[in-house]
Image (cartoon, rainbow, N blue to C red; front, top):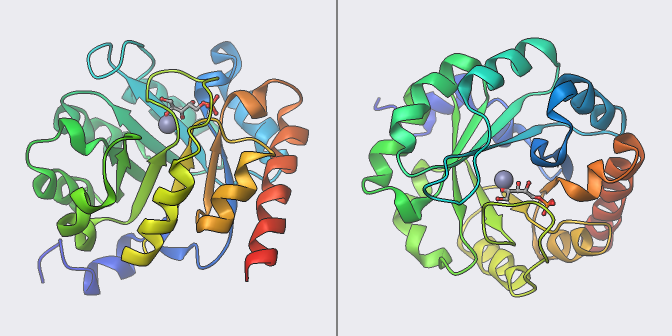
Length: 240
Ligand code: DX5
Ligand code: ZN
């Protein structure tokens, strides 16, 4: 059957998000790490229980910042055990998706605000054997991706404007997570301003993948990652 359909496709390709079940997991964002020792920074967060690496690619067009691309993702994938989730904050993601797939990442999320043919882009990601995500700007409505949901393996709810680490959490995004949970069972990742204080709010609303940059790398990454995960897990138990 077509790659877009889940039935045969999921058995072979749902490697991380599709196998999450009801777990709450932590994902360090490399944006706040020391890039000179990126692999070691990831291993430090892994010692704190991280299960995924969040890899922010930025192009100075969609966002004012400029970071790293597929070459660094390939080096990191070869150096660390954790799977990598690439968050493409770029205006022409289709141009980069094949290289990120080749680099060995497990998931690729795109910003629908800059994708003209979202179905085609999600299909490109899945065809390459990766899980496909959409990352929603704070003012992008959940309903705008309703017809894309059959082709989406995870949703990244941005709780800051994309582009920089260390910004203030936007509290209305808790309600957005809640709304998405009513619409879909696709796992929800939250990204931006996630801390020991905000992680429980997002988990109570239904989020499962906690991306955190500055809150992890501001101190000992293992300790800080563990604190965030445990805060999320407590909220999850409280919720269920
Ligand atoms: C922002 C990025 C985030 C960023 C989060 O555009 O998508 O992943 O690293 O950083 P913190 O956790 O510091 O808000
Ligand atoms: Zn991100």
